[in-house]
Image (tube, rainbow, N blue to C red; front, side, top):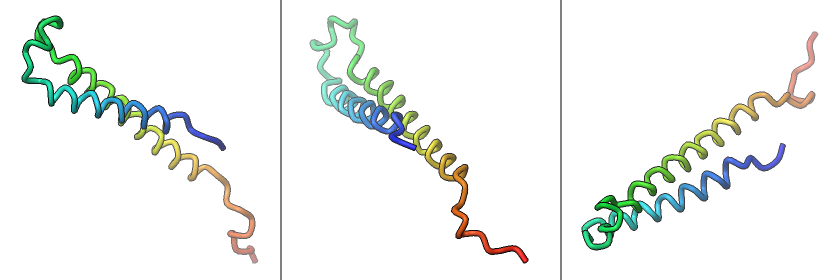
Amino acid sequence: MGLDLRWPIGLMFTLIGAMLTITGLITGSDAEMYKRSLGINIYFRWGLVLLAFGVFMLLMAMKGSKSAEASQPKPPGDNPPRQ
């Protein structure tokens, strides 16, 4: 059928979300860095949001590819002749 856009979108958001989450975990103890954001670790929170969205898109892409395979008709050579 073609490229399902959920695959590259899911991979991109999962990768960026993982990088932001790791950055938030590494820099989480630096209170001076998060003073301007009222002490909220923005990297970690948005990393989790992007990671969850990316995983959701990948799951939907896998589900879509399974249902597309099941709905495709079998070639005529696969069916045994009726007698």
